[in-house]
Amino acid sequence: MRPTDAGLLELARRMQRGLPSGTEALRASLEASLLPIVRVAMRGVGHPHVVRWAREEAHSPGGPPARELARRLCDRLMERLDPLSCRDTVAGL
Image (cartoon, rainbow, N blue to C red; front, side):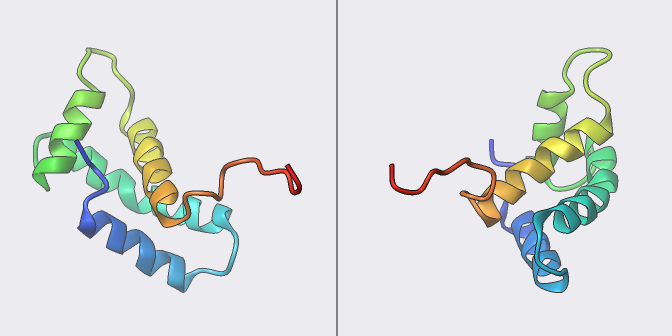
């Protein structure tokens, strides 16, 4: 399952180009944009990959709320934009 299909990744890239440098502004804006997409997907409407992913993630009663799923999806997209941005590195090792 890949909820980070080309359409969502393109949305993230466009947002990245329109925001100042720094991942926090992008993360906040992207997560806010993903929230309505996730809410609709949890009701079974939208892109099939996203709908399937949202339903799998929220499979149990009382599963994670839409905001948590939007955060998870945002994290996946952020990793695809810059796979090394969240990893600790030490120069010289």
